[in-house]
Length: 458
Image (cartoon, rainbow, N blue to C red):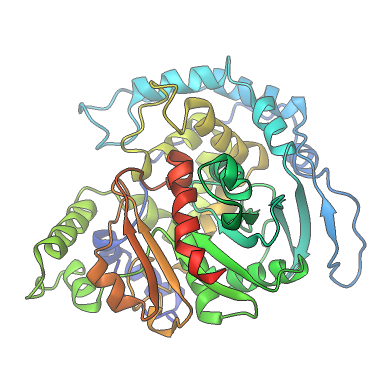
């Protein structure tokens, strides 16, 4: 994605999307639609009962209380989902033998048929309800979050931010290793108190009804959340959208924030960003840097950032199909490059499993958040690429920054670029396994990286 001026208008933002397609770090495109078979129950009925099992809050001035929350999806919503799956009108088969045209028909059909049959949402619902969950209202929006305190003394608190097409479900497997490190190869001194919020417009958080909910605003909301929880010393972690949000927190440097760890860093330097926008390749690149540049160019040429462009330009349009068709929603999620190596659950021992991925997709479905989640891309449009250093204003970050590079991620930042981008880079490590959804794919390794990354800040 080109380096863009954050003050650009919506018109200029949209006009720059063609250039952005070449360089954007992104996830995918699959255009879909489904006939309207009719709703077995009004969406308002579903949504009002799906999300809210939080205790009653007061009205008037913004209530700063923290309320208990329990997930309790009505059976009628799950029955409606299965009926829609059974009524799916499928397209014809792709004309290639790979995923270059999008989610492949046979694989998607098998997954969706399982979704409409043997899949059991109640299992993940019970798992979620096994963790302490809460809701609090910040800046007019209800923020859902999981909050697990460690049994170990002097635990360091960390706020972990997911991205798209993820959710808090993506982070569930790191809770135990972080809060109870002695049971997972660490020491008591490595313990964390863990806070995992749902982004505004995602999952069980509220949906913003106005504009302006970009990463900077969410970063301020996260700082307020940690303040309300009483934390005076904490760190932040993020991949995907969690990276620009955590980076914004570091720029804003709220009281108590000690440093950040990110696994999708904004390290692309200006001359490389210019080359990605169509300019000449810069001279003097090392072999590794040139390989990364070529990989990003190939990524853009293959259309891997098309989903990013579509949601940045027209999230509302994307939302109609994803809201009406379960198969369409699944296809839209699974064409994300982070799923390029996923085998649709063929290996039940490999995380994320088939059920893991369906848990996440079902969360989008039952909360009707495909559209509201996509709007984060539109809100970010004027800022520019999430991997370009200038676009993310990394030069303004003085707090300690830690980076882990996972080999199968969609962007593998060279250390040379990372040290240029972040003046206070305190930790950089390239690990030997894991991809874009690192916490999901390699929870033990991911947790070990957080222990190492933040050890000097305790």
